[in-house]
Length: 481
Image 1 (cartoon, rainbow, N blue to C red):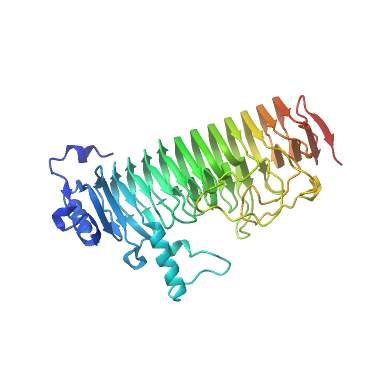
Image 2: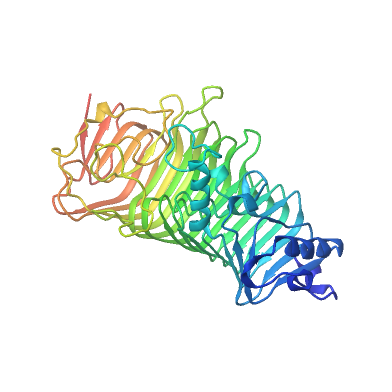
């Protein structure tokens, strides 16, 4: 992508040439912007951030410009919200309608999120900003993102460290040809800080990244009904998340197509290792997720088709493959000790199983589970929470999360409104006794299964079936009327 940059004979532009001072105190926004604008007029230019701490508000990246942060270099975000300009939301580094752009390392972008969030809260207290009704924290649009790239072609972010965001860390909207490679994210300066968000982007690669995010780790979203996240590869990443490590949604208007996810290590993650959700009318199809290893995650996987927007028909979830999973779910909070822990759940329930849940008018179709191993803590008791199979609410329009139904009547795998599920190697292990059966299938047809094993303390290897007739070889079946 940047072959022309490499071939150019023009020397990089040092931001100090235009007055930037790396003392961590002087505001360098105008100097850095001047360097970028000069590089843009060269058609193919490199802007160099040398060793030092350069404090700045919003800067805008232009077409055919590489922003290169050298070793020991830090771009430090201003702690004053008024120093940030609005792209889609307020943001630190902004690019819009640009072509052939890059941000490269090995330096650091520090959003100064703790102090910036304090300033945003100060503006709330003075009445200059309002907290939306029903929210307990300042709105995302008022807490500047670190990187916001919109409607760009040929985007590379490589080798940098990004930390200290007051809001989402990296947001790429409507981009074509996006590469995020070898990026280290530490996004735990405040709540609701996603690691990477790709919204209605095509031809995307996110690889070899290490992400510690107080919200979703890597999240695909679709804001538009006439657009999709499409042709995406996510590979060789290590993720810790205050929400879900890999997530599709919640915004899922157009949907997600042709996505491959490989070799992800998840640890100390509050919600799901993998959450695939379509609730706004979009299509989620041709998704292949493999080689997922997780320790201390609240849930192995959650696949959900819902219907939040009655103005559009429900979407579709089909042709999804999950393979080679090795997951451990702990008994207590998987994110214990995290500086900004997620708020506790409002409803009482025992540990949730993995689940695949559609809706009556739009079942989930064509899911394959292959070589899945999940170790569950057990310990559930009906005295703590209990729900019969026929009393699980539909909750079509509720925000999707693996906890959205509260207590579920299975400890291992819960299935509802599913067609054509193929299971080929599924192992459940239980540390302590659980009062629930291992499997529940409610309105499930065309299920085929082989090599299913359940082990552990009083594991109750039973499949409870309602609304259809299915079997899992080696697992006793209890048929409900």
